[in-house]
Amino acid sequence: MFILDNLWLGGAAIVIAVLAYGGLAVYSAMMRLGYERNIRARHIKEMDLAIDRAQRRQQDTAARSLSWSGTRKFVVARRVVECADETVCSFYLEPHDGKPISGFEPGQFLTFELKVPGEKKEVTRCYSLSDAPIPGVYRVSIKRVPAPRDVPEAPPGLSSNFFHDAVKEGDILDVRAPSGKFYLDMASDRPVVLIGGGVGLTPVLSMLNAVVASGSDREVWFFYGVRSGIEHCMREHIEAIRAEHSNIHIQICYSDPSGDDVQGKDYDHAERVSVELFKRVLPSNNFEYLMCGPPPMMESLINDLREWGVPEQDIKRESFGPASGRKAPVKPVDPNATGPEIVFKRAGKTVHWDPSFDSLVKFAEANDCDIPYACLAGNCGTCLTTLIEGEVDYQGNDPDFEAEEGTCLACSCIPKGRLVLDV
Ligand SMILES: Cc1cc2nc3c(=O)[nH]c(=O)nc-3n(C[C@H](O)[C@H](O)[C@H](O)COP(=O)(O)OP(=O)(O)OC[C@H]3O[C@@H](n4cnc5c(N)ncnc54)[C@H](O)[C@@H]3O)c2cc1C
Image 1 (cartoon, rainbow, N blue to C red):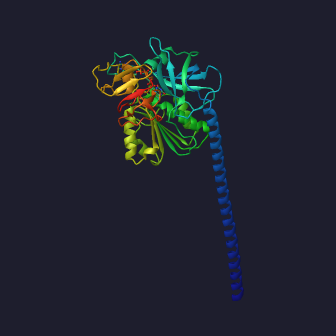
Image 2: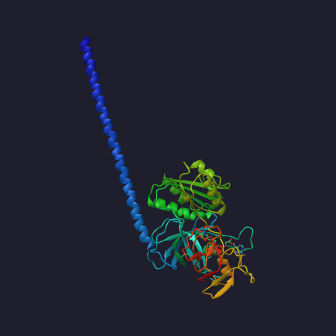
Image 3: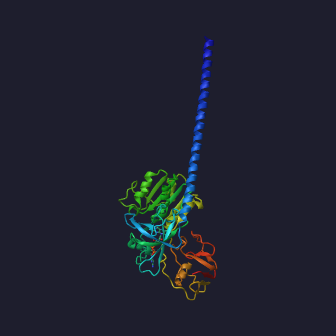
C-alpha cells in the first residue's frame, strides 16, 4: 500500500512537472509571440511615419515651388466674424488667377500691400495664416486695433480698420508669398505646447489645425488666453478639436471672466496663461514651446520657462511687433547732426546720421528716402535693404529674420560708421 501510494505520488509529481514545464513553454512562446508582434507593429508604425514624412516633404517641396516673388492678386472669397465683440474677422483669400498657390509652414504669415484711401503710399502689414495649409485658399484673422488708451485722440489702426470697415467679399488685394521663421516642424513628433494670447492665437491655431489635419497622434497642449468670453475666438472649432482628439489638450484661460462666463463650459482656468499653470497641468517641462501674444505675457513666460529649466532651443516665439510705424510720428532730422555719413544711393542724397533716431528706416523716412517696413521688430523682412558699403549695429537685439551678408534689417539697426545704402 505504502509503495503504491509513493508510486502514485511520484507519478503525480512527474505529471505536474511535465504540465508545469509545458505550461511554462507555452507561456514563454506566447510571450515571445506577443513581443515579436509588438516589435513588428512598432516597425510598421515607424515605417508608416517615415513614409508619411517623406510624402509630406515631397508635397511641401512641390507646394513651395508654387511660391512667387513680389505681390500676387488675391480675391477676398469670404469674411467671417470670429468672436462675440466682433473685433476679430477672418478673411479667406483665393488667387485671382485661379492657379495653384504655395503651401506654407503652419505659423508663417502673409504680407499685404494695401491701397488705403487717403494714404500717399501703400500700407504694408503682415498677418499670420490662421488655418492649416489648405489647397487653393489662405485665411488670415485680423483684430481691429483702436487708438491707444493713453492717446485716445490718435487715429485708429490703419490697416486693421481698413480690413474691418472697407474690405468686402470680391475685393482684390496685393499679397506677398507666405514667409517667416516661426513655425511648427511637421516632420517631428516631439510633444508641443502651443500658447496664444489674444489675437496671438492666429499662428498657433494654424499649427494646431495642421496637426489635426495631418491625422498625427502627436501630443499637443494648446493654451489660449483672453480676458473674457466676448474675446474668445473660434470657440466651436476649438471645442470640436477638444472633443474629437485625445492627444490634444485644450486649456482656455480667462484672466477676467464676466458674470456670463461659465468655468468648465466656456473656459478652463480663471487666470492668465503662466508657467505656474503649466506646472499644475503638464506632465513635465519636457516639451517644445511655441508662443505668440502680447509682449508682457511672452516676456514673463519666457523668463519663467527658463527658470523652470526649459532649454533655450525649446522656446520659440512670434512677436506682432510694436504694432505701429505710426506710433512714433516722423520727427525732423537735426540739420547740425555730425554722425557718420549715410548715402542713399538711388535717391542721390547724402546726409549725416542723427543719433537721436533708433533705426535706419525712421531716419530714411525723415529724409524722404522711404524704405518699406511693416513689423518694426526685425521679424518680417519687409525692410531688408542692400548695404553697398558699411556695417550696422543691431544694438543687442537679435532679429528673428535672417538678413544675408550684404543686407540689413533697416527697421532694427543703426549705422556703425559710414553707410552706402541701395535706397
Ligand atoms: C509677423 C506678424 C504677424 C502678424 N499677424 C497678425 C494677425 O494674425 N492678426 C492681427 O490682427 N495682427 C497681426 N499682426 C499685426 C499687424 O501686422 C498690424 O501691426 C496690426 O494690425 C496693426 O496695424 P494697423 O495698421 O491697424 O495699426 P497702425 O496704423 O500701425 O497703428 C497701430 C497703433 O498705433 C496707434 N497710432 C497711430 N498713429 C499714432 C500716433 N500718431 N500717435 C500715437 N499712436 C498712434 C493706432 O491708434 C494703433 O493703436 C502681425 C504682425 C506681424 C509682424
